[in-house]
Image (cartoon, rainbow, N blue to C red; front, side, top):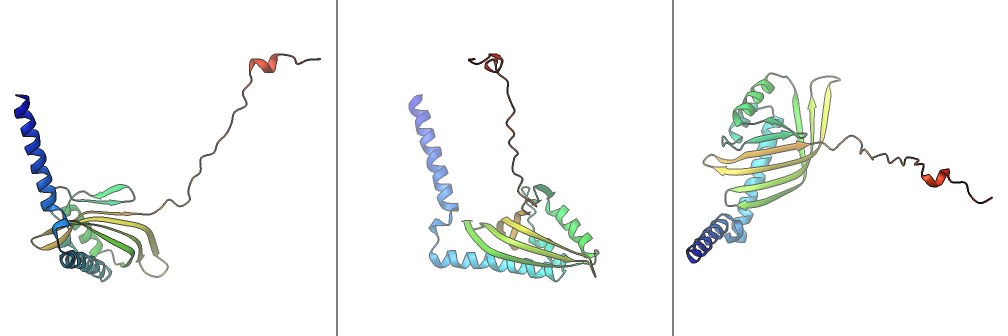
Length: 186
């Protein structure tokens, strides 16, 4: 029985390693990796350009309908489905503001032939009209998946750094000991 269990474990490990190898970009040629990275970068450029133009209806198909979809903003789940993100885009279409997003230090990491992780610094400026602007600067991360319609966001994340780092205040309490009560030499 132990030998059968050992063989099953070995077979499961071999299948698992085979799956990882099949899904990892390691088997891709340098040209394939370059092409996939360029596709991801083009998708991100299109997403930013579409958003900056206020063409919110065109953004909806850029979000995956998969069950794991999440969009996080400043540590909170803003949208837990592509459907909720689409509803927010419908509201944004009537808000009357313009957006301008810039990404710097963008890094694309291929996870497989059809998945990629992205990280970047971002600046996002909203203009609601004279005297009503808002700017957000921070870190952007995302997981993109390649589906039948092309690359899509499976997860997205925007976070600003804290306004000021908060250093803990270290207070050392005065402690009286029994030695404090003992009179010293006279």
